[in-house]
Amino acid sequence: MIEKQRPAWAVRLQAERENREWSRKEMARRLLQAAGYTHGSLDSLVRQIRDWEKGRHFPRDWIRAYSIAFDIDIKRLISEESPEKGLGEGDDMERRRLLQALATIGVPALAPPLDAVQSIREGVDRALGRDEGTHLDEWEERIAEYGYRYLALPPERLISELSADVYTVQQTMARIGTSDRNFPAWCGVMSMLSLLTAKVLSNLGHPGEARHWWATARTAADRSGDAKRGLCVAGEELIRALYEERPTKAVLAKIDRIRAQYPAVPCAGLASLHSARAQALVREGRVDEALAALRDVRAVFERLPDSVTKEVGSTHNWGEDRVFYTEAWVHAYAGRSQAADEAVRGALDILRTTNPRSRTQLALIQGIGHVREGDVTEGIRHARAVYENHPPEQRTAMINHLAHQVLAAVPAQRRAEPAVKEFRDLLVSVRV
Image (cartoon, rainbow, N blue to C red; front, side):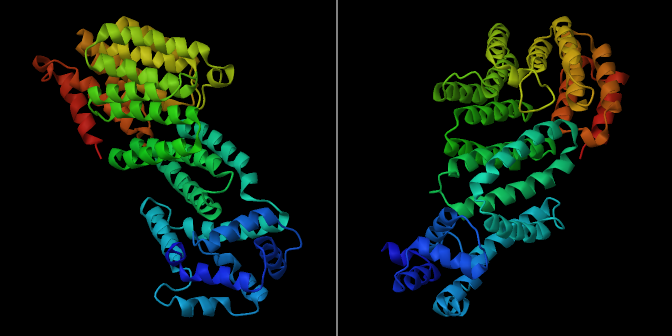
């Protein structure tokens, strides 16, 4: 039964090997020899042979070597045995589908050359004896770099880079298979790339598509077995949920489920989770509980290692500026403008000038606080000035949301005032 479920080409590859009484290790030696490699990782190739024979993915780059090793035209033989499918058509269809998807988000010229260069690089790595596991450290470094680039670059520039990297890692994971000992670590890499993709799509104003990527990030984090990454994904997603106006009751219920699911390990994700809870509580009008939740946020922050708190230029870290940001949000929505202003000053003292989005978000939060406390004129004036001066390419969905929240806080009887109307017209004029 299992045999019939495999593609015909996979059955034939195994049959040809077994007819010659070759072990998979012997098959790997002969493939390396046929491909002209004097060195190579036998163990890595043995794992690939196992996956090929199980039909998990097609050995496109090794067909010529197979033909030399078996001394038959393996490409013609497999095509004859499986004419309805064709040689490697399933993999090729998947590749085309992925490249078409990349093209729709602005990677039409990058993806095909990337695919070709990737194939060449893999051949060089095999010659050097490098297997997929040796690339993990490089990808962790790449993710760390994205933490800095995310805060500095417009989202339009990041999405194509992220898409290309997701594609590359997806291909690697498909190639090594779920049985590979490094598969959980690759899931960890994919969870962070998916998280970043979700955040960038959200910044671009595509919350529906972002939700699919959040789901992918959660699944990948779970498969990685890394609780800290699971908490990181959950905390970041729930903070975004508040900016996307998802029901706060649903957000709070999910926070409670996650707190029960994951151990209370001090990490950036746990801090984000507590931050989301404080912000959701104040949106529900539960001010006293929100203020208590702020104390939880600071308590988690104080338990974080210096490696997480000292560097504030990365979205992956959790410096004290983020504590102040949460405090500013809660006090602003509670109509406590003086406390919100104080928290904003604390954050601005820490933040770098190269992070314009966070500074603008803080200024808009100040506007919310002033308007909610009754100082409509000052709140609107401040919000309009900072919004107009913010670079248009950096006006993310989060910034637009906060600007609209300033407007939404204006009491009905004051919405006809000239300053309010002018700010409303400004926001309408830049809506995409």
